[in-house]
Length: 450
Image (cartoon, rainbow, N blue to C red; front, side, top):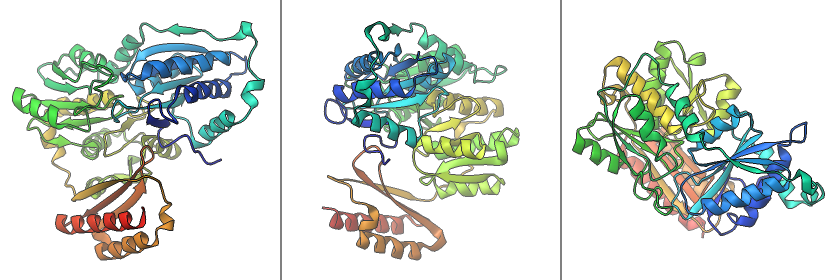
């Protein structure tokens, strides 16, 4: 069935407004608990969250729904999304739930799920969960009173995750002598990230570590690297690390304060992995949004690049389907499949630092090997979606501009999977031409979608 509730990354929206209501959360809890019953009839589900004010009510509603279907709940409190994936798998839980809207402002929230293997759920399973929520089946299978589930709090969840992260950093290396600025976006990693880098020997200067429930991602974190960039220059730090609210993505800043995005991070790590012969099938999985410059950089080094749809879950699916072990997104989702089942900002930063320490080179030098084409992205907020195939004037304009660009650039027009936004991306050799094209396409879209 076609999913209506689930988007690219779970269910997301404004908190206390459909679909992100307590009622929906409780129904999701019931449907997921029923879907993940194991053969013995017993099941346990991990629930974690970021630092949003609305996380409390969704945590309670989900737990109530799961317990009402006979499931036991393991509450871990604020923890990065990849931490929930790790705990779900390591604790042999039947599923994991993350309450987070990732990089969105505090008003929004979301709910996403991991299977017992620590991977995000496939579209087909999300569709079945929606079907259960809309039908009457769950009312008929509620367990009797003695079989109602319990909720337990896991007090050492943070410590377990910290140990796991540190173990992904090469044991023969240390961060001693490095000055690191870390921006935690007032989000889920506000305690964990500084501790990880400190315990590995770095001098850490933390930002965004005072969550109020209302300030997550507020002019900080990976969407606003300007803050960490200014601090790096002020403190003459070696590197800046900027996470988003649920810490599943990272943007790096070099010692000059210049931003190193996900594409450049992939270039740095892929080259090192290929040199060490740890890059499976000598292939990197990126998305349709990754810059042509990354593709050319990899091709020059005889590394193949495969493009997946936007969304780290689709990158992971492509990696698993092809037997690859490294991929990511320009936005900073980096997946090291030998270590993790999903994007992990802290883990990715550790891998970049390992290359930096072992090579003895600065990030600015490592990242400068890759040249980028001008790439301009326009986001149009819309009241409603219209299938792109039903916008003939826009399609005609896209075709004309693609012909004009030839092989010197790309055009990508798509709807966001998490917001009511039409994204128009144009990439080409000449910035002026690129701006002209993206503005013309945006105007066509506005005219045709009213």
